[in-house]
Image: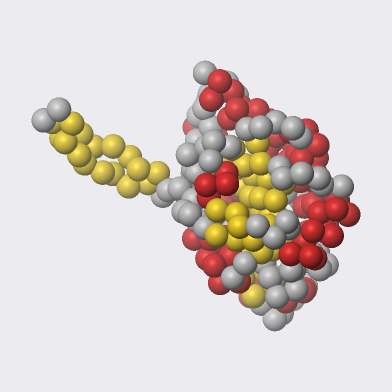
Length: 223
């Protein structure tokens, strides 16, 4: 079967990220251990009590400004003191998005009402997915309240934060169904805005692992 080059690039990146996540997970040991922190890290040397100390500074999600299905501004501060799951989709997506939303709805139902958990879905088709469209989409999914936010905004900023911060594919492609290429990843982010896991959001197994890791991450904070 002939596929556009973008298909293979997208899936190569997606497969690589899953392999990295699985490898790091294996290195942490048993299920009782802390989740790994994914992404780049930088060694920073500073002076503490007159001595040079080298510490690791981990990649984190930078500040952002998008608009939710309620028409208000959502920033990184909105998610302070929360763990959250991020994903990228568009409401008219004819391929993987319906599967992703069925699976993310499972996460929503499991953690509904938990004040330490939020979900953040970014549309990658902001020209079509207005505030009103996102609000109707959320209502049709049966989502109420502000625990699961659907956000829109400047397209380039959405693509940039997807690829450069969340480490997933999100870009325009005229050869792709719907004209947009994006991964089916769900990204687990901790309270310090560090990525703690990347999961296949199109399968039950991937999302079962996500929910298990969310419980592990919440347990870390209880300690």
